[in-house]
Amino acid sequence: MQFKSQAVAKPYFYAAIGLFVGQILFGLIMGLQYVVGDFLFPAIPFNVARMVHTNLLIVWLLFGFMGAAYYLVPEESERELFSPKLALAMFWIFLVAGALTIVGYLAVPYAALAELTGNDLLPTMGREFLEQPTITKLGIVVVALAFLFNIGMTILTGRKTVVSIVLLTGLVGLAVFFLFSFYNPTNLVLDKFYWWWVVHLWVEGVWELILGAILAFVLIKVTGVDREIIEKWLYVIIAMTLITGIVGTGHHYFWIGTPEYWQWWGSIFSALEPIPFFMMTVFAFNMVNRRRREHPNKAAVLWALGTAVMAFLGAGVWGFLHTLAPVNYYTHGTQITAAHGHMAFYGAYVLIVLTMISYAMPYLRHNAPANHGRSQVLEMWSFWLMTVSIVFITLFLTAAGILQIWLQRASDTPMSFMAAQDQIALFYWMREVAGLVFFVGLMLYVWSYFVKPREHATAA
View (tube, rainbow, N blue to C red):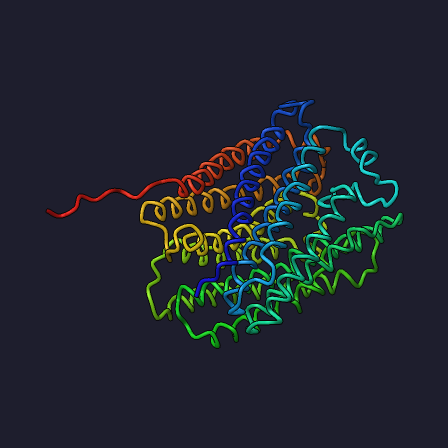
């Protein structure tokens, strides 16, 4: 059943893809700056490129989550969205605020941007991933509150399902934990302690609820498996996610000045964090194998299965590799962390947003369950190019990290940081080549929106 108000998801999806392209471009710039240090300097210094790269990642994923919610919730609630006009107004506010923030990063020095935006009145800037000016953070809060009101009223006045309730729980958590970005204590230990309440409890907590809800929705639609079966799986997955993810925050507390017991709590519970991702993989393949129908949107099924596998590998396996305190003693802050971060974000969140877009866009653009064959083939090529290249990026960064640990931290004659970087430059070059292949895959995805079906000769 399709609802007219689901159309508000379309601009959110378009914005997400556009910002995704920008994020990868700045990632390629950063990758080249690793080996050609003065590339684009002083126009785009490394610290600015990194801010733009990571901020675009967060913003485009938020656009994707909001678009997914605006498409999913009316269908689950069996009623029109509470206020499509409010959804469109918040889209433009969020897009303009995000664009102006990126322009600010690029156009003026960061200290000048802080002064220009009144950071001295309520200091929140200067922290990794939370570099946004205070005024931008306030705008995000307004957008999030309006979004939650819109989604919440739609759910409350319509049919309540496990999928929509889990999604709403994740979205509320996303908004609540973002409020800790306004808490900026002068004590550095306290600062890092609560900083992780935003960063970790987003990506290893409430975002996983959003991931689970979206994946469950798509699997219900493309497999025809009974909703009750999928909902039972979803309950178990989110329970394990919250049990392991909340206490697992402790794996960030090992070396920041917190009590020693966090080394035990953090190690034990974060070692369990791969379990919900493994369950998600089994869940996705089990549902597809038990499907009652062959859905015409083969690309959406591929994105969904890819989400489960790559999330398990990136967030689960690569997370576990360096999460135990005795191992993390050597690995923290090295390219091992970057390897885990790249594959985890791609597997868990990039792929689930692309899964939802792949499923919903044919309905939004053509009122059809699937794109035509040529478009789907391009989408699937895009999936494989991006996925294989992110695997190689992860492997190259892992190799760089292992060598970095030996040269810089574990050998009898440890090198300085920059001397070690020179020794692992080959891996950075290989990472850059893999990044270019990823970008080609992303461009194929964009092209899939424009390619036309082949015209077949009609029978006489």
